[in-house]
Length: 159
Image 1: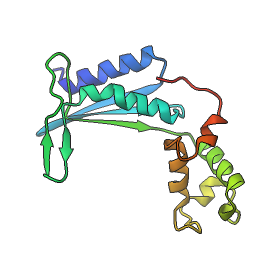
Image 2: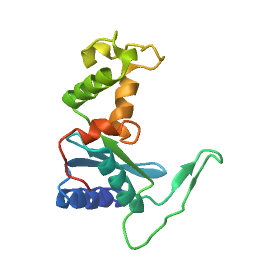
Image 3: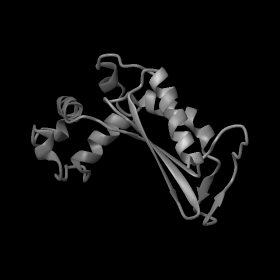
C-alpha cells in the first residue's frame, strides 16, 4: 500500500534528482502521523539547504506548536500528497569538516592552542566554552555567520 508520506518522499526525490541535487529520502508512518526525511548529500551549500527547505514546505500540512502542545494544520492541501512532519538534513564529509576547522583556526586567535586535527578536536571544550563540533556546525550550516568559508569553496549546484 502506498501512503501519502511515501508519495511525498518519491516526489521530492524526483524533484531533487531533476535539479541535480544528490539526496536520499525516507518516509515513516506511525500511529497518529507520518514523516519524511530528506538527507542532502555531498556537502551542500547552506543556500541549497534553505532552498530545499522552502520548496519542500508545501508537502507538510502543518507544524507542532510547543506553546499549546498541539499540532496545527495550517497548510492542508488536497491537490498534492502531504505528510505531518518533514525534515531536511545536510550531511557533510569529514574532509569539509576538516577544511572548516582549518579555516577557523587560520582566522581566530582563540583557536591557536586547539588541536589542528578536527577529529582530535571533537569533544574538546574551546576557550569560549563552545565545543569544536558546535563551531564547525555553525560554519557549515549558516553561511551568514561565516560567509568567507563558503565563498572560498568551489561552486556546487544550487537548488
